[in-house]
Structure formats: structure tokens, C-alpha cells
Amino acid sequence: MQRRAAITLAVLALLVFLLYQLRDVLLPFVAGAALAYALDPVADRLERLGLGRLAATLLILATFVCGLILALIVVVPLAANQIAALVASLPAMIAKLQAIIAERAGPLIERAGGAGAFQELQSSVGNLTGQAVAWLLGFLRSLWSGSQAVVGIVSLLVVTPVVAFYLLVDWDRMIATLDRWVPPRHRDTARTLAREIDGAITAFIRGQTLVCLLLGTFYAVGLWCVGLNFGVLIGLMSGLLTFIPYVGSLTGFLLSTGVALVQFSPDWVSVVLTVGVFLVGQFLEGNVLQPKLVGDAVRLHPVWLMFALLAFGSLFGFLGLLLAVPVAAAIGVVARFGVKRYLESRLYHDGTPILTADAAVRIGV
Image (tube, rainbow, N blue to C red):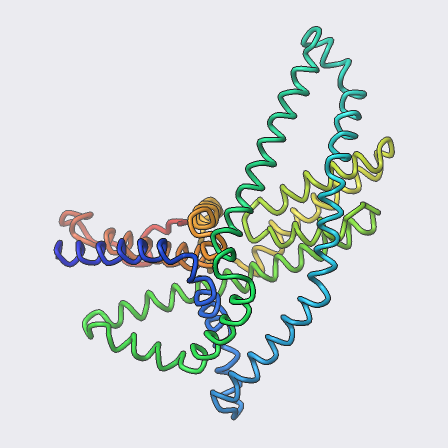
């Protein structure tokens, strides 16, 4: 038993090492596998409607590629122009925001902390802001250099649909082959774990994608109605970043509040309305969208998910972001299974009555 566990850990360590070494060329293949995994239910449904597997795959990928090309032609240039304009205006916005803070809060801070207190605070805040911007740019640069610098965007767009096509055509046969490789005595357990992992990944991706789209639309429309500069861009970006717990809402809140202070001051009503958009959005996310669309099926703790996304993104770039959710979900399912088996074992009870599976504790990995 110990030898088998050691061999399994050695194989997993070797797999992680190979993934890390090949991270620069794996992105199109992992993206193609993720695309095939996401589109397999659609292909199965078309098969049930009488369409052959090859025809269903061609129809699905043709529709996806057409939508992607349309997005590249229409959406990406508009978003790029907005992002470039926002980045170009950030220095002026920060300078004006510092002037507003100096005017409003400077005398109060000087009275509370003595002469020069506000200048020291302003210098510290400026240094922290510079460090935060440098960290963010470095993180984004690592994502870019770790994924697309070597492979190239053209390779990604060309190889990914090809990989997805072949995998989608043979998906059911590959799953059946993997099932046959599992020893018969462990097959039921492996199937149960695979179904739970598949359910966790599917529930998270489907539910969180809907949450991101709905929140991004709400933020964009709300900030546009308030009249905030770059409101649509900030709202959509906040919704997209909601995939990482708390990051999207916090980023959008800070950015929109800063822009609102610069744009609307001293019109505090518009600033309050801007803040209100995010407060309402957070209420809807926590009390309506997350419980209804994601629920308890995923059982991935937000802290664990955040750590997995940031850690995998730092190690593997954009490839890591693709792998983070399925790996975190798989680890969570296996950990819960291990804890349940441990709580049902004699090692835990030492001769006392064994708990049933339903009585086993649920952990929030």
C-alpha cells in the first residue's frame, strides 16, 4: 500500500514537473481540451437529435469560430481603444484625486498629526500606489510572457480549434478507454469521483460564467446611467474579474470610485450613486446570483479558489488560469473523499461504531 502511494505521488510530481517545463507550448492544447470538454454536452445533445458525431462537431466548432472571429473584429478593437484611453488618462486622474484629497483632508490630517504629516502620508500612499501598479503590470506581463510570447497568438487561434475538433470527435471513446484502464475493483470508486469532479467543474464554470455576465451587464448599465467616464468598460471588466472571488468587485469599486471623485467632485450625489451601484451589485451577487446559479454544488471555498487561481496563474501564466479551477475542484473532491473514508475507518473510531457517509463532516475545500 505504501509502495503504491509512493509510486502515485512520484507520477504526480513528474507530471507537474513536465507541465511546468512545457508550459510555453501547452496553452493551445489545454485550451483545445477545455473547449472540447465544454462543448461535449452540446455534441451529445445534437447526437440525440439524430446528427452524427462528426457533423455535430463540425457544426459546433464552425459556430464557435464564427463567433470568435466576430468578437475579434468588432469587440476587441473597441475594448482596446477604451482600455488605451483609460490607461492614458490614469496619471491625470491620480494627480487630480491627490489634489482633491489634499484640499479636503489635508488640514485635518495636519492638525491631527502635526506639521508635515499630510506630506508624509501622501508620499507613503504614492509609494504604495506605485508598488501596486508595478506588481499588477508585472503579473500581467508574466501572464503574457508565460503563455503567448513563445507560442504566439496566431498559433493559439489556429491550433486550439484543431485540437478541440479531434478531441470532441473522439471524446466518448477516450472516456471509455480511460474507464477500461481503471482496475475493476476500483472502477466504481473512480467513476464516482469522476462524476463528482465533473459535476463540480461544470457547476462552477456554468454558474460563475452566468454570474460574471449578469454582474458585468448590471455594473456597465448602472455606471453608464450614472454618467461615469469609462463606466461601461469598468463595469464589464469588474464582471469579468468576478471569476476570481472579491477581486472583480473590489477592483471595479476602487476604480469607479476614483474616477467618480475626479469627474463629479463636488457633486457628491453622483459619487454616492456610483458607490451604490456596486453595493447593490454585491447584494445581488451574495444573496441572489451565487445561491441560485452556483449554489452548494461546487463546494469550493472562495479562499481556496483565489489561492489556486493566483498560484497557478503565477506559475503557468494563462495556462495556469485554465488549469486552476479543474485542479482545485479535483483536489477538493479527492480531499472530501479521503476525509469521509478516514471518518468511516477503524483508524478514526478505534472500535467504536462507524459513522455513515451522510454523517461525515463536509469540508469546504
